[in-house]
Length: 409
Image 1 (spheres, rainbow, N blue to C red):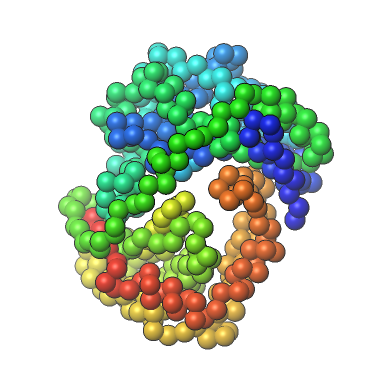
Image 2: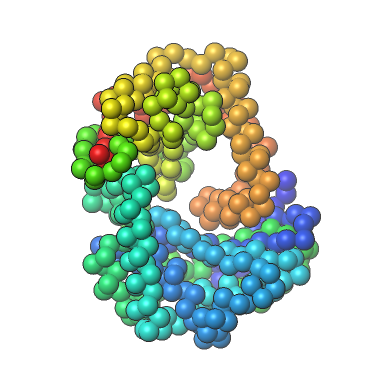
């Protein structure tokens, strides 16, 4: 699997994944997310993502909507705690149309005041909808709990009181502070010659003025010292929801691959994970139980989530503790370790078959690491993880004295 990488004079980087398909994909990723907000800007990164679509110097909102839909394409966007992305899918002959649109949205959005006021109501409705989904809300609440007042703990959507205060001037100030060309990656996947793609990207992205980021203090402020905490909140939910977890390794930690493997063994997206086999298959205590490891640029979190009937809460917690204790005290056998590695590499390879998802993945990798590992290179890193390494990671991350717990009931 080969990737073509190019950097323009203004600092914007381009990565192309050639695929033999009539459908193509592209995206622009910006190294800016909710953790880059000031306290009074809580939710602004996500709000910017919404209002990018509300008009540019070249297009009215309905022109933005129809630009790709008129040729059967699709346009979307998302915001995380550390990046913002606008991405599109379209027929391969429409690369120029897609690049033109994405460039227009990121660099020439006008943020009309009238549209801002309308979008506030939409985002507030999104927040209220989110508050009605305890299985999603509890994950954000848990990170807020373990990161305390650090920006990493803030929810991406923001709060009602901050969203209502957003203005066009606040949006422009945020963009001036955070949207810089040396912190952007244009990613593409499609059946197009890489040299032709560079010429197209140069026209729409490469000729823009350079704006480099100089203030790194805002992001790379070390999260507060972690102290385990247990908290129960009365949410009047039908199910009882619970998260058990802790802080974990950051993106550049060499143990990150090992923790991904350990998390997958414990509660990955497969029916044979240890937690699923125990809590669901053997005892029938829960429909959903999962473990998720999320690494950030300077921190990370490991969360075990499950929802269950309140009568099974304590029993489920005991079973989880039993499974984590096994990983802390017993090395995986050679066959177990081989199967676990094969399972994770298979998941990664299958995920890469989705061209859009793979494009977004390599775009983020270039944005964060300034490099992209092939599946073969990732597989070698997974194969290098030993049973002793997994035992050490389990003892550091899953030690009962380091685990926090949040319960919604």
